[in-house]
Length: 315
Ligand code: NAD
Image 1: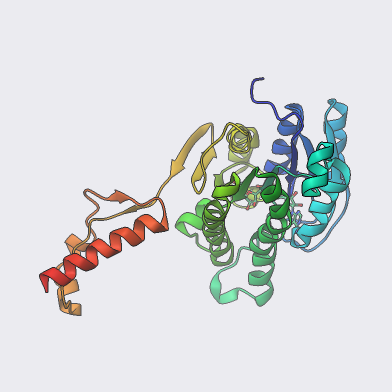
Image 2: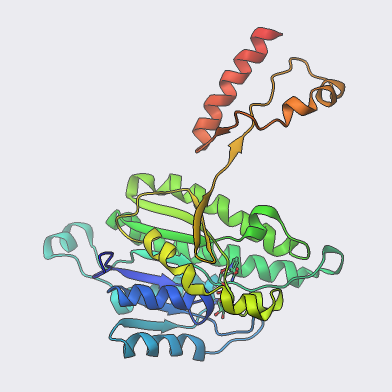
């Protein structure tokens, strides 16, 4: 096993089952100290128990690994981070601790906890909308925000947020979930920029796997075939110190691994355009031939300035 995590500390949220459990087991197997967070509720986010996290911690310990359970909801990220620091915090060497008051560390956060409350927009309640945002978006924010100062001080961090194909494409009956999963892409891409000078890398994962979330929408044979373990190797690599990508979107499922990127069509500059000009030029405006990859917002700003010049010189 060449990708080792000895001495590293990770939080995996929602690690009591499904995908998160496999990440926690794999990281621990590779020497990482893992906080196994799980609220232990049902798939709709309306109950709680300690048994799910405890079971995974027992599994890790039985295999000779190091782990501790945490049962807080992800919206209380500071409590989850406190569990990591209290149990696995490193005290730096004597001089470091004197100079930097360096009293603990946390290297990896995998924001994985999730629930579903699928319903069409017409029938959606405030609770359906709010609970989805509380767990997925507020949860990822709260855990990452609490971890950030530790990562910044030690100039090292690996963060994964979990999106979904629903967040990329939208999905019938999932306006709440798709909106939240889409929000997480913008969240990770922004963290990638804020973390760059501190060696904090943030990326988004789009997984597909059989789990108790997907057993409501997939036939049983597919749930059984799409093993969560097919996703685990990608996530494990994404949080390793040798991994250098940031602000990217990666996908895994069914043994396939790939990336999703945004390309912008060449479009057309039309000076003093009217709605009629837009209609007349629609096929050119929407043509994706020669589309360009836009990696960052500063690339986009540069492109916009060049287009403005083109507009002004042609008007
Ligand atoms: P899962 O239900 O098996 O696992 C989610 C875990 O999160 C559960 O153990 C649950 O108890 C825990 N959890 C829920 N709310 C929590 C909270 N407030 N605080 C702490 N823990 C909480 O589902 P899964 O399929 O393994 O999903 C993992 C993640 O992957 C989710 O974010 C999900 O939206 C995402 N995802 C999964 C798929 C898929 O195909 N399975 C596809 C796209 C995205």
